[in-house]
Length: 64
Image 1: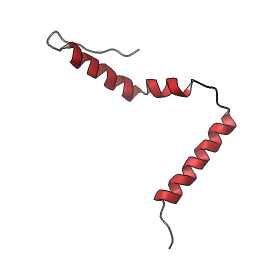
Image 2: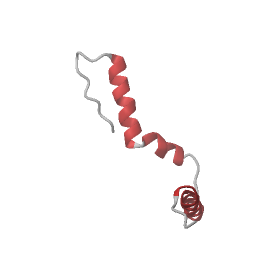
Image 3: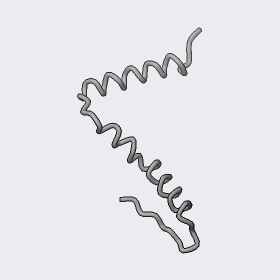
Image 4: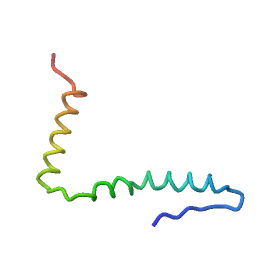
């Protein structure tokens, strides 16, 4: 559960902004989107390997 320390001098907008920032940092929305559909472990692993290969091709050091 995310708790926001809202002071009397803070406006509702400021408190809402703090709440949204904490939600984003905690990764709550990302986790909820990931749980929307079940994904088999083998498919998750395949996606991780493909993503790593892509990053290596794009950003890795090439021996050219």
